Image (cartoon, rainbow, N blue to C red; front, side, top):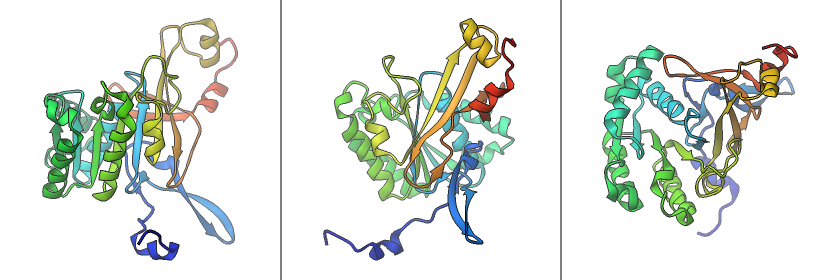
Length: 284
């Protein structure tokens, strides 16, 4: 059959609820209900179930930190996470997840038990051959009963062939849909790309295919105007996060201020507009 009546899809339609990230993002995705004849927004409690979300940003903007926090949160809640590490060797991922567990006060033994790792960083065949990596992921998902997948970074799978970015991203997107996974793709930006957009290496290939994009950014305070506007001293770093879009549910589209705490976790503080209002003109 090449077409469906909409009603035929009811049984296959996924439920709309959130998969917690361990951050304020859990309150920033929402669904709309009707109560007493009025529309009301209700926080979803996480990124949408079975969504594939793109995390993009310049280097050191917090993408991997957010992905790792999501992994630890899900593993600590008893859900299996497949973490495909493309950039950093797996032993470094172990250390990072252990530190996140301590900071979030999550039992690390649960994280060790529930996080499954595929190390593509040191395996050229897995990095260069999407089919080989997909087959390995399918085996891990089936054997370990995985429900969440992180690829850090998806960019590393096409870094020398960006013309193929759309084709490669589509393969992994369709794979996660087929296997009913909630996923995060971490994307790297090129130096010529605007830091506050959904664009990443390969252009908008990732953003156009995935269900939603979260943009992380950082701004160096390096002039008097910035000092006056943000109330921060020269040399400080201001970090922002924004849900650029999500086709599965409503979301807060404002730019928010966030911090990477001393313990190495993401703490979303307040909307950028509210932050600026707190700063009095000339205050430093």
